[in-house]
Amino acid sequence: MESLSHHDVINLLLQLATMLLMARIFSEIARKFNQPSVVGELLAGIILGPTILGTFGPEAFEYMFASNPQANLALDGFVQIAVILLLFIAGLEVELHLVFSQGKSALSISMLGLIVPFALGFVVPYFMPEFFGLAEGNKLLFALFMGTAMSITALPVVVRILMDMNLFKSKMGMLIVASAMVNDIIGWLIFSVILSFMGKSGNLNLLETIGITVGFTLFMLTIGKALLNKMLPWINKKLSWPGGLLSLSMAFCFLAAAFTEWLGIHSIFGAFLLGVALGDSDQMPERAKEIVHQFINNIFAPLFFVSIGLKVNFAANFDLLLTLAVLVISFAGKIIGSGIGAYKGGGFTKRESLAVGFGMNARGAMEIILGLIALENGLIDEKLFVALVIMAIVTSMTSGPLMKWSLSKK
Image (cartoon, rainbow, N blue to C red; front, side, top):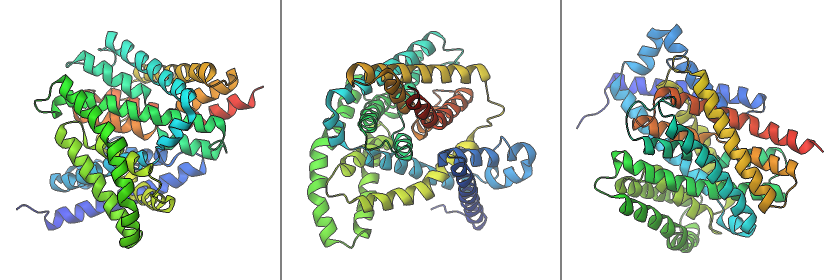
C-alpha cells in the first residue's frame, strides 16, 4: 500500500498552512471593506496560484504547489471533502416550512427567477457556442449547464446580505430567502441530471437518471427527513452533546454523498439533500448548526476557495467580452425574472420588486462549485470558468448595495 513520503507530508502541511493563513488574512481584509469572506479567499488563491506567484515567483510556486503530485493528490482530497461539506451547510440553511409558509408569492418569485435566467443562459450560448468557449462536445449539454449556472441563487450569500441590512425577518426578506431555497433545490436537481451525462452515470439512460434523481430527492425530503427527525431526540439524549450529533451528522453527510456519487449524480447533491432534511428538523438545535457552520466556514471553505486560484491563471484566461456577456446575462435574467415575480405575485411596488431582483442576483459559492465541476469534466474551458468566477464575485459584491439603492429611492 502506497503512502505519502516524508517530503510529501511536509509539502502537504506547508500547502495547508499557507492556504489557511492567506485565506484568513485576505478574508479579514475583505470584511473591512464590507465584502463577503469568499472574495478575500478567492483573492488569496489568485495570489498563491499561477496568476501572481507563478508569474513573479515561479520557483516558489513550483516548489509549493506544482512539483509534488502525491501531496497535490492528498490536497485534492481535502478540497473534495470541502466541497461536499459546503453543500451540506448550504442545505442546512434551507427551511422547508418557511418555503411552504410563503405560498404562491415565493413560488412566483422563485419560478420566474429560475425560468427567465435559465432561458437566457440556455438560448444565447446554444446559438453562440464558439463565443462562449465550446470547442467540441455536446452543445445541448453545454447550453443546459449555462442555463443552470445563470439561474441558481447563492442562499448563504443572500442570508448574510439580508441580515446585514436588517431585512431578514421582514416580509421581503422571508420571500427572498424562501425563493432562493426553491431555486437551490430545483437548480441542483437540474445540474445533477446534467452531471450524469458527463460520463459519470455508467449505463443509466435519461429516464433512469431523472427517475433516480427525483426519487432520491423526494425520499430525502419526506421519509428520510422523518427518519432523521425520529433519530435526533435519541442521539441528543443518549450520546455526548454536541460531539455525538456532530460526528453522526458528518457520517450521514458522507454516506448520502457516497450514495449519489455511486449513482452517478454527484456527491455534492447527496450532501445538499441530507443538509436540507437535517436542517429542517425541529430536533436539530441552532447551536449545533452554528458549530457546524463555524467549523466548515473557517477551515474547509477557505481551502476550497483558495484552491480555485491555484487551478487557473486568471490573467492569461481573462476574456473581457466573454466576461461582460456572462455578467449581462446573469444580471438581466435574475433581476427581470425575480422582479416580475415579486411585482406580479408578491404584491410589491416597482422599487421593492427591483430590490427583490437584486437580492436574488447574489451568486457566490454555488456558481463557483458548478463551474469547477464543469471545468474538471471538460464541459467548459478555462476562459469561461474565469468569467463565471468573476460573475459570482461581482454579483455577491453588488447585491447588497444595489438593494440599498433601490429601497432608498422613493
